[in-house]
Image (cartoon, rainbow, N blue to C red; front, side, top):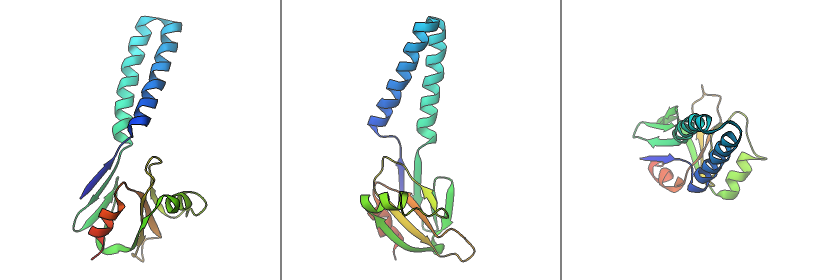
Length: 141
């Protein structure tokens, strides 16, 4: 099972508008050639950041991978689906500095997965997910 979370349309449009405002400022002050160079750089960097900032959740029979982090399923403890209010609490007043956080601000729901490995000082993983119930179904025996 796999879930990829990329920028929503509204955020993509906002960033494109910011890019266009930068291009307008460059064009007004430096002319066409500088604007063309800046347009190429902005386009490349926007596309790059669109893919680099995406968050991938991948669950196999043996491992849970969240971004570049991964853990064996046997070390997962209690798994809790978090509503919008629960996520706001855990990201705000209830934040634990020792927890592993894989959050995207535009996704309002997620999972709290306790870690049952005595060698791991991380108490839990807090993960953004559009479909946390699907992961809970697959993770619970």
